[in-house]
Image (cartoon, rainbow, N blue to C red):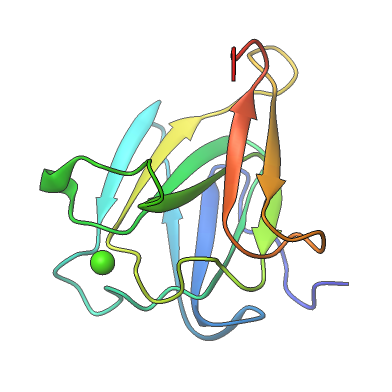
Length: 132
Ligand SMILES: [Ca+2]
């Protein structure tokens, strides 16, 4: 097992160390459909090494500051629904998180893909119906 509990369904917990260890921070949708957590100027900037997220949220973990508005093209990692990554592919780069309400049953489902077969490394979600 993971040895760590899932956060609330609309939240992600991010950790400073691999395998859900070290300092952590929990980020939530807080009832919104979309929210940005800007941590670029905070104590957790460029520290995330693992994460775990709840079932009702989709998320982009972005390497750069919010104002750069560039989270794709190998400048971030992402996922949808209950998922986790013990060893992120963009270790110690996270500067902001975009979170979206996610409903795999009544909304658009998605799959979260990982670079490595053991669900580690860089990840990305693919929404059902995406042309890819
Ligand atoms: Ca950064």
